[in-house]
Image 1 (cartoon, rainbow, N blue to C red):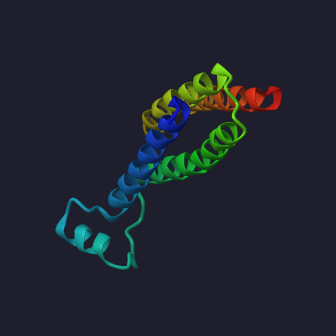
Image 2 (cartoon, helix red, strand yellow):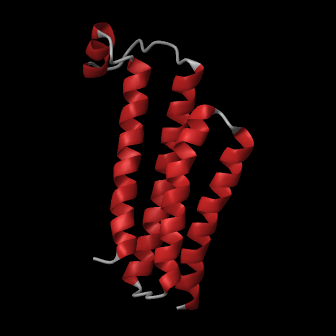
Image 3 (tube, rainbow, N blue to C red):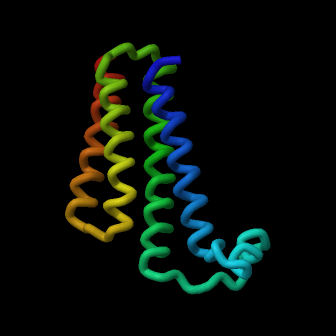
Length: 133
C-alpha cells in the first residue's frame, strides 16, 4: 500500500473520531442522562452550546472534505499516478485538516479559512498530478 492510501486510512480515523466526539458532546454523554440519550434514538436532544455547534460543524466539514480527499487519492491510485506530488498533497491535506479541528473549535475565523485553503492546495496538487499523468 502506498503512503497516500495510508493517509486516507488515517484521515478516515480522524473523520470517524470527529463524528463520535460531536455526537457525544451533543448528547452530553459524560452524564448518566446524556449517556442514556446517546445509547437511545437521540430524540429530544438538548440544544447545542456554541462549542457543541462548532464541533458538529467541524465534524460535518471533516466528513465532506474526507469524501473529496478519498475520491481524489483513490483516482490517483487507480490510474497508477506515481507523481510524488500525490503523497505530498495528501500529507499537506492531512496536516491541514488536523490543524483545522482545534482552530475551528476555538472559533478563529480567518485562521480557519487560511487553513482550509492550505488543505485545498493539497487536494489541488493531487488533482494536478492526475491530470498531468
